[in-house]
Image: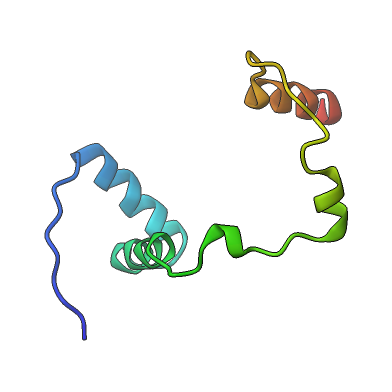
Length: 82
């Protein structure tokens, strides 16, 4: 059973979300409903089974506290594709 929900969201966010939904050929309600289902699912993140390879690598790298992975990723992708 579907129920109507009223939300208060910034106008610019709504406009961007509508454009995104249109580009995905989905309704905004459908996108929001699926997002809410995702974040409220009963499946615990700790229940995800890791492969033996991932388990072996887990904890093998300690990044410095000031490490900016987004900056580093952008740098590496720029080197790769430019």
